[in-house]
Length: 151
Image 1 (tube, rainbow, N blue to C red):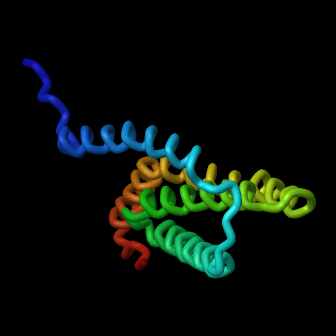
Image 2 (image 1 turned 30 degrees about the horizontal axis):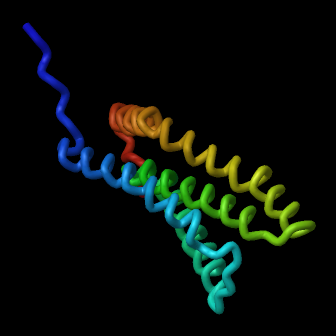
């Protein structure tokens, strides 16, 4: 007896569309490389960074709550937080002025943002094991006739 083919999480058309977008981004990026100015002044620079950091704090908080509550949202929230941390590190480093400002940005990236992004990546990869452990915890609690911990 042959095993059935595993069910696809995404339709092939959606996967093909995502692949096409990746291919189309190559010429777009090349065009930007040669047409964007090397320097640009913006009036909303502070708003952009403060707003980004507020959303990063919200992502951290949501990830923490999801971990505490054993939420099925943990994997997605950890992926979001890790991605935001890598974006933060990248833009901090490449937009920093040379000298002390750039040194601080590089140190923050190496000592904080990248390690925290790696931690978030580990959570994403380890979520299945995390949820299995949580299920065992609930199963053990129900076998002892104790109510499971409320979240």
